[in-house]
Amino acid sequence: MVKKIVFIATAFIGLIILLVIMNYSGHPYEDEQVFDNTPEIEGQPTTGETDAPLTIVEFGDFMCPACYAWGEEIYPQIQKDFIDKGEAQFTYINTPFHGMPSETGALAAESVFSKAPEDYWDFHHGLFDEQDSENHHSNWLTDEVISDMVETHTSLNADDVLSDIKDEAHRAEIDYDEQMISEYGVGLTPTIFINNVKIQDPFDYDEIKETIDNELDN
Image 1 (cartoon, one colour):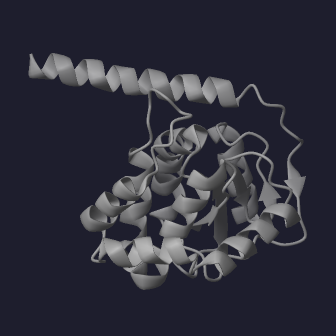
Image 2 (cartoon, rainbow, N blue to C red):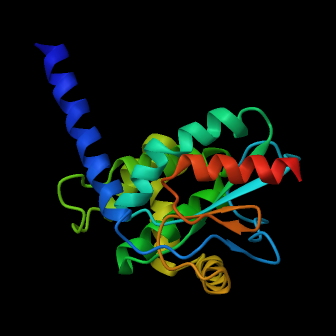
């Protein structure tokens, strides 16, 4: 009985992710674009070898269902094929496109990263896992959720993070991210860069892998 319930739950989550991907893929994409420079990653949460020859950047939003789907479906493949092998490092840049809840999530993440960078990625993944899979437009990103994620996934006191959010202690970091969003023409989340190349379709792993392989060859 337990196995049956687990199977049904897993199938349901898989269906939700598939629907999100199908909905995202309906958006018009620009052609793959090449910029003069890779988005600046200094001061941003980054995982992987610091001397890796290649940089992958995600412009993402904690309120974005497509970002959650990308993190579940595409990122693990990139991690296995390139990050874990020391060929790439991965950076996340806050892109608060969904109003105040998005800004709250970004401010919370910036607070955690500044106070306990070693705990950032556990908090990052934990917060994405809290998305409301049944109602993508619900305001699920509350102080209560943030407090729970801080207490569960970091060594920090949740009240300190909530205080940072209230005081907008890391507004400068969010403003800097928004400058990069404008500079690199980011209009949808997730938007993925491989070095200075903006990927046309972030859910097309073949395109991503081909671009990575070309960048590594060069």
